[in-house]
Length: 391
Image (cartoon, rainbow, N blue to C red; front, side, top):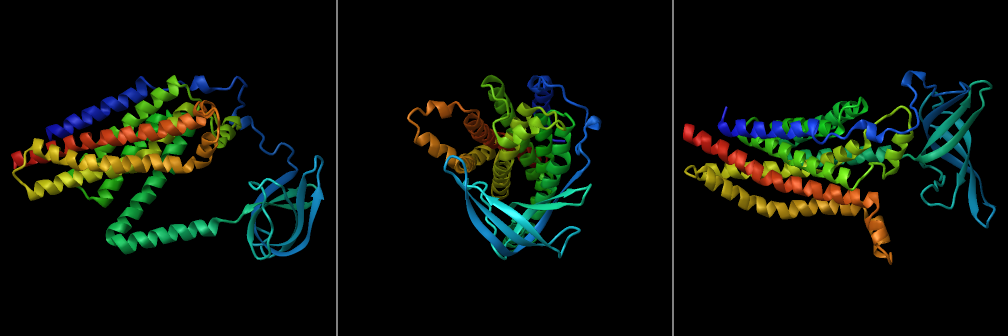
């Protein structure tokens, strides 16, 4: 094993050790004062008389469409719809649904003939009475269309390597779904889990996309160090700001659900790591590949010269990739930015946990990305230089 590889692995082990020892956020800090019931003691269907099922339906006919006056001068639209059930045990049957359309556009789901919707079927076990309520538009087919289009474009443009790219993406998603999320639910430190899963996902991706070689190894190690540094910075801010990890609706739902007892601060930091992983991975493999190509074109280059060349390439990449991260977070927060821009006293919004969380994620990810450049350049130049000397 090359001396450079040993040094890189040692550095990575030290950083990972910090996660498990020095910056772990105690789970006790985020426990609610309300006693949590044991999972086995929970009775999800307390009455045992109501059964709820989600179904896909299509509107066959609008039987009635009226507008009702509400107290305070507000109005609401009420529709009586004839539905055809497209899934479940009632597939093919026709049912009547009363659809209330409120003034709030976020919850206003209008029934239109020919369109598909997601409904909830509320069934009384005792008397068999059924009620159907539209809960959302049926969007699943569009999701599958976009995924299929993405796969086709990747395969057409990148061909065989595109197929390997898709496989690596599926494996990464599987790591998150079947390793990261279950480990967090079982009480493992979310931050440590995210770093380890990130390194595993990066290693598999590099092997599939770049092959079994030194640049894959260097890129994996560089990515590991980069995301670990991002995690360190994120955790520091989360502890010192402080941030609770409960700024969004989904986290509040989890907090209020007795089935979960999570470390929400660690969960916030883990999310920051996963969100920047792709960008850091991209930078690391770009640096490693460029150094390898430079070495092939200039076999006489020393490790120092390779590092300098790699950093020259990295400096150009840093600007564009940092913008990529910041703009990605900015785009998701545009409604919030509009609120801030029209506020006479913006300090109110600049201190909101939601805003600070987004800023922390963008900056911590960008710093990890920047750190990955010299780390990958050092590892790759030492390994390639060492290989040349030994050869």
